[in-house]
Length: 303
Image (tube, rainbow, N blue to C red; front, side, top):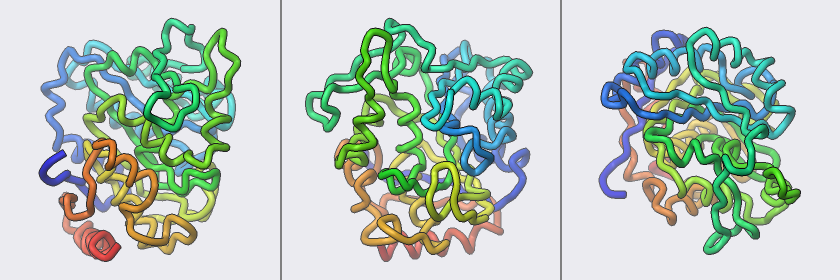
């Protein structure tokens, strides 16, 4: 990728005001008639910031539906719990019925609804499967949270969140692709490799709160009171790491150059997004965010 990637930043606790303001920066009026695949963060049934806040979902869907997409589908697979039960507990099915969008439980798909991605040239021993619906989508929209990850990912932001689109297993195939991922010494490279097979049109990070320890389902809470948006997963995650560092994150996430974090380094090599902090342009959407941006820029510049 050439040029700079914009990351919009808004200081607020008000999702109803903040999310529409962020989404104004994207040409969603051009998405009329498009098939949109939506990825949120419903890895477990735990409360935000472990899971996507229901008001974040409400605002994103409401804004997307203003321009009459042909189809709007939230596709999810939970790693910590039964997906259908997780979505029921988080209120997603009720919201889906209220606002008129489809919610797809990926664990319930037939084999014909999955597409095999070859393992050639990556660290997946047998390749992996992505949903056909995702690969056929005209637009991909994601909302992620701000969290560390204690099971080998180190952090779970926009890149890691898409693990929830990979099949744990598919009908007729007993192989456990998630077991492979979570025991592999190449887990963070494998996360990046998932992301090379689709592009993102918009990412909303809900960093009003976050976890600075443990994660993804629990941890020490922080309250940056920030909402962020970008179309570049690498830029978004680099900024997310910088925010975690601003709040004193320890361990691997707090050490070394940000673009030597394995997820980011591999994603940059695969040209999923930018390859250095100098290619990030932080854009303030309100005066209250200016101090945060100065701190984030300082961390990015010196790491």
